[in-house]
Length: 145
Image (tube, rainbow, N blue to C red; front, side, top):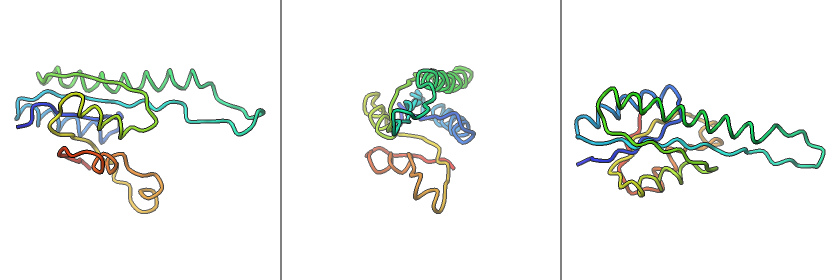
């Protein structure tokens, strides 16, 4: 039933747990894992000409390297478990859109992702990529807390 599993990762502790579950899930279903990590571009826009701005190129290089490292960790875990794997790194200010688009592009049957479990005002103000994915896909989504 599930042959292509999309596994978004951000390298967090919960994402590592989700990876372990996704690998077991893939083994049971004889599926492959497509893992995506979204590198968010430099978010700062100076409000004036005299604003001190960190080096955007350095920021984006570090973010891209971190995203690639996150994908490499999933790839290593999949290789160890004998699970077919494909990794994707994309740049975007809207991770949920990239996750939903990747699920469609790679013909995924399910999205398995971690939720950071924010509550109260943090949840309200910070939003949740997991909630946005749930709202914008018709695929089943398995959420790990």
